[in-house]
Image (tube, rainbow, N blue to C red; front, side, top):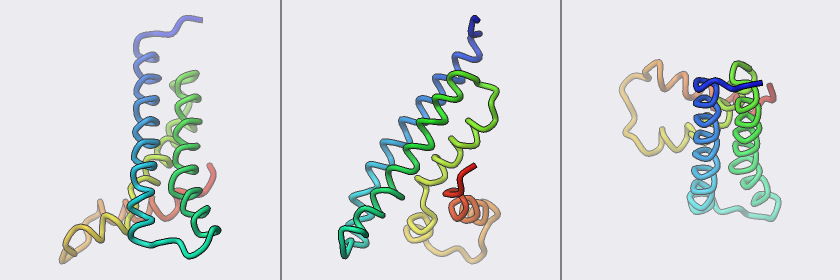
Length: 120
């Protein structure tokens, strides 16, 4: 079975986005620990799992699926979950001045960030 240029491009895009998720997730871990130091080993493991392992796992599995079957919607949805998990709403809302009104984009970000951990 031959892969078209378009399908090959989608596979490369998926791997680049998966790498982005892994790098950003690993980069956010020290910031998360600095802002909220873990009080126990369990809290450290929880930060590591939710902050690094889950987004990375979703993104890498999504890239594998998309690389094999670029038209598979589940792969793209899993990649969306990985991308949404590395953009924590609390960090974004904590670093920008509070807007007078919440825009639809901020509401969408908050909604996706809150349910993105649910397995598809």
